[in-house]
Length: 208
Image (tube, rainbow, N blue to C red; front, side):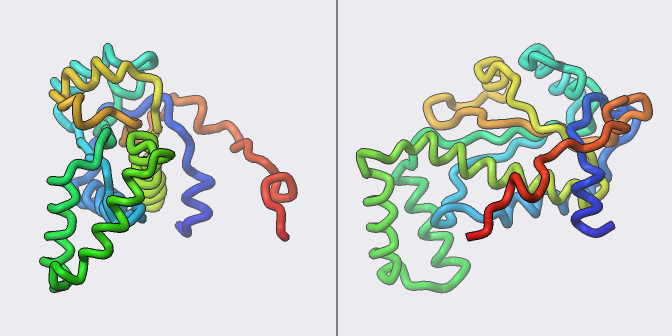
């Protein structure tokens, strides 16, 4: 299946087959696509939680306005975004660059100053920026899953506080941005037979 076929086959599943679990090797490939996602300045101001435990999924069900996907999916991915870019986080990121690339720390001082200047700008809202970054990772997760023939459903209809309680999030530092259910579509999910409705090419694209 090429990538356009995969995207045509993809839809937001309303009911998964609870008897089918996403294979570990496929799950790894999907998660690796998120790890390799583009991110502003490479900072990746988010964290990805993978819930495969059935008892934990059951605890999460009340947090969703439409829980059918949570009760039937193989795994639930919860992406949280940072509320603040703390000094410790930035310093850790720069140390990681030094470790991976062998770049001397002093050569990163200008880069560090640029990041600090960018994030301290009065028009810059860190939380909003971090949320947008997390959605890039979400897109890669969905695309990779489609290529792996794994079904998904992205969801924003949840009570963030309730999710945070179950996952024991530090609400001073992070908040839930979006969630993604993974699994395999149920045979009786009627939505899989519907034709995909998208804007026609001439209405979506404008070549200049």
